[in-house]
Structure formats: C-alpha cells, structure tokens
Image: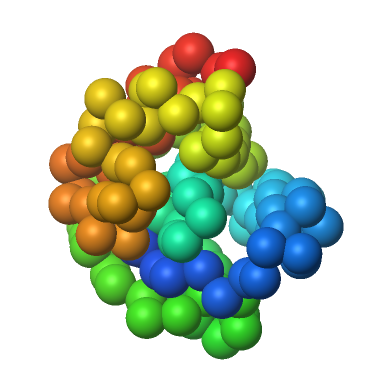
Length: 139
C-alpha cells in the first residue's frame, strides 16, 4: 500500500445558524467513513473555511476528497498537496478536529489565523503545523 497525504482548504458555505448542527455532522460522518476506509486526518474549522489533512491508501484518499468536492458545505476548494507519505502524522485520529473559537483562538492566532486572515488563505506548512500542534495537545 502506498500511503498518501492530501491537504486542502475550502471556503465554508455554512450560515451561522447551521454551524452548531453541521460541524458535528461533518465530524461524525468523516470519522465513520474514514474508519471504514482506513483514513486518518485532522480538520481545522474557522467561521470562513475549512482545512483538512487526509492520510491513507491513495485511492481511498482520492475517493474521500471527491466526496468533499461534491459537498455543498464546501466552496472554492484549493488542493494544497497530494503526495506520498512515509508515515501517518495523524495515526491516532480517524478524524481529529479543532475549531477556532474562544478556547483555541490564541493558538490559531500564533499561526496567523484570525478573523482577518482565515484558514482558507493559509499556506500548506501553516495548516499542517497547526493541525499537528492541536492534535498533539487536544483542548
């Protein structure tokens, strides 16, 4: 099996009234499907966007990304990386998640993510490093 890591960012099409219901749905669906397909990863959520790292067998990762591309809650998807990986960075997570909120605002801010600089606009290294930091120290 060839291990693939895929990283993308997208704009959120969720309206504020839907967020408290839809974010847990996204996470629960990702965890269920990822467990079935041998995928691990981490999802970063801000009011304006999403960024996600997916790891697993190449075909499974591409299939998962295809479902995300068709999901109406995501807009303007940016594929930041699709590459062979030596090992899983998020092996313990069928899908971990961190949302920028009052609890995590400081750590997101350390990586330059704020109300004025959303996750969608961030570079690959920033997204992967922030997700790794949050996965290592869950709130």
